[in-house]
Length: 225
Image (cartoon, rainbow, N blue to C red; front, side, top):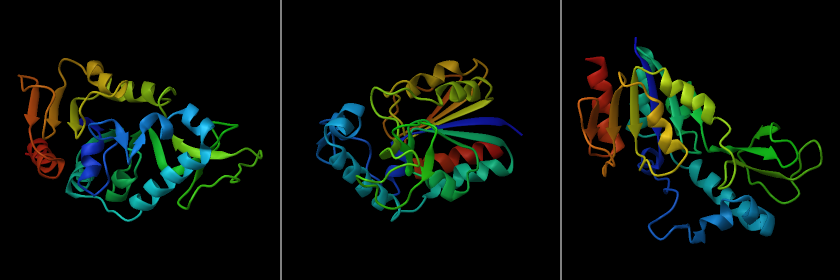
């Protein structure tokens, strides 16, 4: 049984039909990302931000996990697997993965603007006037630009203790998540799956320059062979 850490990004969810975080011109669904993904944006126009995430939430509830999600879940049958995802969807969990760390928050949760530790499951629209038990507005449970990534230390420990690190569908450009690979031991085997890989193969790194739905099953087969 191997101790495996998996770092996933938008490329995994894209094949389920979820749009990636932003396109080449820095816009997300036609919005500047700072309008809809920053504390200042929420302060300036909370209704816009809530509506934006309401639309994302509706979209998430209409899609399903893909073969990459299921392949990673299958790994748990024979290995100790922790998935560290930059994605805010629940597709890993729906596919059967039981140990998932969401670095950037979760779309199907809301939290209090008064108490960051007061987090609620939330699948319906989140509107102005939806208050927590302390009578403060609820906000999406998303880590926005300029906010700390609260689970980063946990993720670092997982990567540092892993015998195998699998990286899937991420450009490795978004920090601090992109820096997690630096915490892997020199003895850790690294598998990198992405159509446009940002790192090269080496004695330690095996690169699969392909989509997650085809590349991840190959990695899983290699580890179980």
